[in-house]
Length: 192
Image 1 (cartoon, rainbow, N blue to C red):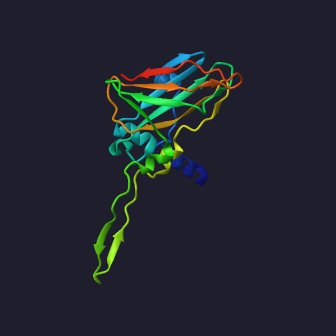
Image 2: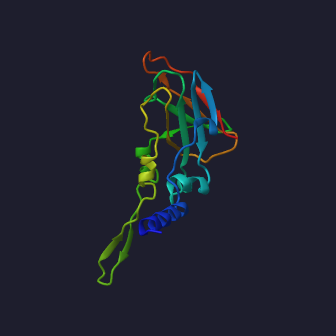
Image 3: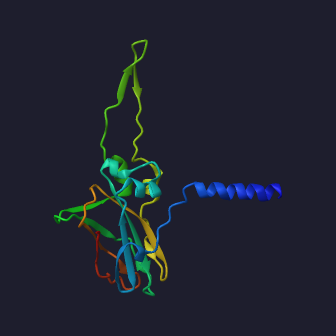
């Protein structure tokens, strides 16, 4: 066996052990609803195991943040605009929680008082803490599609300051046909 083949086999074996990059499944594999040839699937990442697949060491749920993966599959034959999406997380008691934009997630905890430790010379030393919600995965995995061509799909996360509860649902509006600007029917996806 050549060195190149041996290295290739070693590399392939190492890739099996590493976590595969996060990829969303087709919309119909999640809790979903279809209207006018457009399927919207959603999945709350409410457990540490699920969150690890998309966010690595960061578990947004520990910080009061519920990430919900949304996948939109366009089989309508027309381009769909997704730049005016409006989502709400509706709890079993009908309470509504609006989306927190991905760019604002890092500010959820608010300002914190820095740790101050006096050094041996008596001069205070400020210890800096890293904000765990200021990770690239939060904005990098957020839903960002503005348009979905026919036969294509788009996926990404939306973030809610809520805990996931059984019997809750996701309410989505704002999908439009690109050519006519006609709004599609709303989507209400229950989570069981």
